[in-house]
Length: 156
Image 1: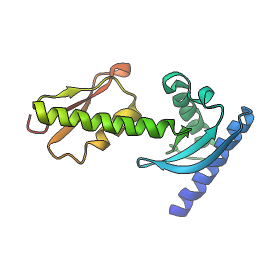
Image 2: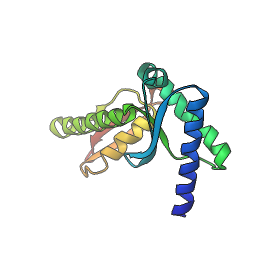
Image 3: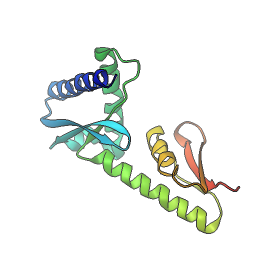
């Protein structure tokens, strides 16, 4: 099973490299890990183009490349993420820190804290970051673009 995943990851890595070549973007791509997810780490001078404003291009690139890989490698759901010049890694660290600060506020004030709207990936980071806090619970609320995480004491 693990050998099969390594082969699929290698094939996915080649798809990412091919995609960048077709876009005429010079880049170095390697496999890595962000949080608990397989990541393809792209190093390039064209980072602004790939990341876009507030990461919108990178979000779209992740979606597009997953669909391409699913078709080429015959996966039902590709499980990886794309990172460009450590943008996602920094975002991951910032969200984890924000989640922990929210948990500290909840502990101190004994009131729930509602974070700003987030993407599913960002909400997942917050939920995972606070799993290790037995006195804190998290819940996603809202719909669509307004979906956000609420952090509260487990005693409420």
